Length: 383
Image 1 (cartoon, helix red, strand yellow):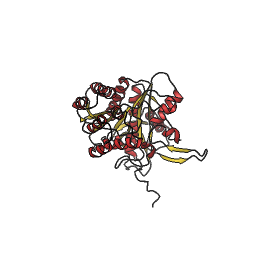
Image 2: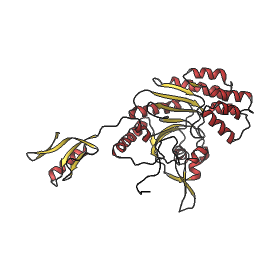
Image 3: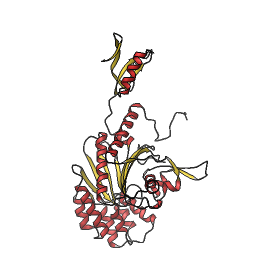
Image 4: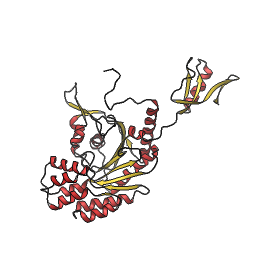
């Protein structure tokens, strides 16, 4: 195999896309900062027990593992940043009140999570710790929508809502192990009624009927009315449905749908969950929700809600950006030209000095102006 061939689902990022990704990264972080979120930068590599504590099998299978040559301990390359941010909130910040934190950095997956996906996403996310109310859920949803707007997503977006508490309430009092629960979750996600009927054959009637009903509970706001009618009238189910109604009412201008059987993602979700979809994307561009137990393994179990997205995937559904405007300058050792170029660059202009013999080469920058000398003075003129 040639030395320059990269592993499957790993790719270099070339200039135009790299510039778009970097500009988008800055826009997303600036959008989060506008809401009061503070930037954190967790390490890419961490002890395995810290990286995977409380996250469930799905994240474990996605994590590359290795042995630390200094300590002999098992380490992992992060596949998701949320557990690390929960650790930071619990042990390094340890604040009493609300903490709003954001991040943007690479994560690495052992396998792509869907066809044609990269195994090295650039994950941007924002999270609120310390508030259990719908106000925090609403803020996270609004920030996610504003982030897509700032990125330049065109056309309508759809916010798809679900709530992990509904399925948890339907499992209450059912004597099944974690493996059985995982199989039921998989059948629900696939909307496989026949398999679900087999798996729940020995369940109490109310739980079995409720789980089977979930397969059909997806669509517009009428889904919540139907859920009120067909699901067991437990406190957990009623609270979840009421919260979903309130959240949907606060998303003015956004198209909202519901899929009450949606259980995709990692095991730490504990309440409201959402995905945001748009034309041109094969799956949700943004996923998030409430995960109140995520900090428990770090000794500080407090409310948490947030979202994340892959900046590289987001770039793939956006229009290509035009080449960056620049000023072309001749190559010279003259002090006057050098001073003029330095002044232009200090004002944020891009000045490309043309190396001798390479005057006609095309690159990432669109040189729409040039520096010319007139009467001993260097001035910028349009090309």
